[in-house]
Image (cartoon, rainbow, N blue to C red):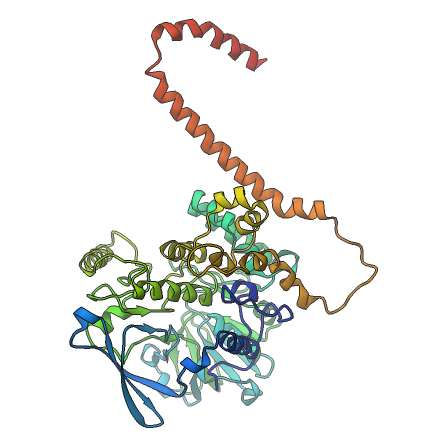
Length: 519
């Protein structure tokens, strides 16, 4: 029933990828198989009684504006179920097909591919490694899927060759102490520091830390100069490369009947199968032009959700984003915001202004004044905060430190879990506070399958000092630095207003204080 390979495991941990008002069960593993995740979706749908609203095995054929759209904002929607078409009128439409709709198989970009006599398939067609027993397999593309498939095939195939144009940074699901990587690195105080420190320093430090764990140059994974940073989550790829089960190569230059020639001149012979892990294309075949083109142009979608040309804001594009964190958390906030816009509870700028801004942005990109970031992944915390601010559900950290210091500590210094966007505002959930304070309990629970009765209790003070000492110190330094700048500004502004006589009267005292300070 799914299009994913059987061994697929999530690469975002459960506490960071759940719906904001429905935590995973505590005994669910932190990273789970797609069957477990499917169970969670079913539990969510049943808990909120959503199944009665879902029409399964139904294809959307067309979504068009009604003749009176400018007054009503309504849409004509034609669907097909078991060969029978149905037409209905809807007040609003949310397109939630996301990125992974149609496989991208760019065969025309690979010279000689039509001469190749072996098997060719897209990664979407891959399920299990058994059919590739003792075969020599080339995997083209090193994203999360390409890395996973190469690793799994290496257990059955005679040899796996992994071709990448750009290289990638490889990160593990577990971080220091064995805790989930996402929970240790997706934090508000990290995000604050990243916005203050120079980007070059941050990149240098990040690369330095990752190369300490795995020297990417030695493994043939280094990012090609001039290309954008790319990360994949894979715990086993370095081991497979180290054992020779996977060989990393540059991009493909040419194919022959049975061989592959790479850009560096090397050749791999007797290739039996080529698997293209080259991603997907997104499209909206059920929409009409020009709306179809506008919706596929992420540059001009307002906050990645609303097309700018509609007189009535009753169409939203949900999930057409890439995030540095959980896509599920991002799409949930998009949907929460969109429904409030549909109801008139939130407003967005008029279409004329949005179109003018979108056109100007496109022109600046064409002229090279600004970069086209539409293909980059958005910062998880910054984007979710932006949407939450539109809704009114963004947590007020300074206010929390005054009213609920324990919760504020977890929100600011702990992992930025989706529950944070249910603390205040529309859709506030009474269980959000407890979910945040118990998130580590649910993280540790599935690991405690072996109870050691005589194990000593960890020193709580030492643990907290190690965990929270550095962030508190850095936050304090930032505050002191900003306070010193403020004092200098006040001193500069007041200096011109002080009477020369007063300055003369104070001069000996200032000189005396300076000498005392030196001592």
